Amino acid sequence: MKKLLLLCLILILIPSCESDADDNAPIQTNVTLNFGHTWDDIPVTNADFNTIKFTNDNGDELSIERLRYLISKVTFTTSNNEVLNIPGYQLVDVTNNENLTFTTATRIPNGTYKNVAFTFGFNNEDNYTPNGYADLNSANFFVPAMLGGGYHYMQFDGKFINSSSIEQGFNYHAIRAVDNPGDSPTFPKDTFFEVNLGTVSISNNSIINVEMNIAEWFKTPNRWDLNELNQMLMPNSAAQIKMFENGQNVFSLKSVE
View (cartoon, helix red, strand yellow):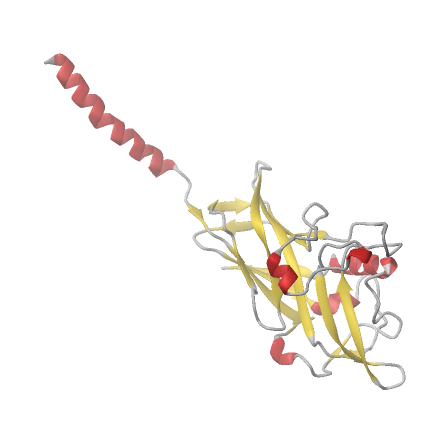
């Protein structure tokens, strides 16, 4: 009889312990990064495209006709310096108003993180062809093999009023900086970069609003003169390095919802 009572007591306690463990488990949630765009403090959407309505820091009047860029390697860093790596990437397509949000495929614990970050473009390990990524291939986002292969980090196209007062096209395309185009290209500097958004508090289904200030691509530390640098920038490693330097100031954390 005593053995039967002891067995019943054990069976009662086991579910209770499991319930306590579940109660103490941290709540986990998906998090969404929402990408918005401005020209300095003026909001920009694709409704503003194809019209000469912006002026860069050099005084060049310009339009935007296409803007799309790649983000990858989203990470959340805890107060204990544990880094939570989120798989996946996103081709943010402002032109077609598509993929402006990236929702984590992995649920993460609620709480305050000392840093949230993502990579602009692909790092060298992920930036590969010829098979690569089917969606990026079909979007014609790849880089020719003679320039090192892999993928663009950004395609930013438009028109500007040149020094002869004539409308002229520009192609501000960011890729991995490359020298010696051809069969044996070399790479003088990595030009992908990590964007650090700083401290973020996460709760159920939080939305992190990230802002790209498009004007900064032409501003700091390199004041961009479209009359000098407008096309054929992909094989120009010096131009790619300037883009990399200006890109450090482009993204910022706007808010968390």
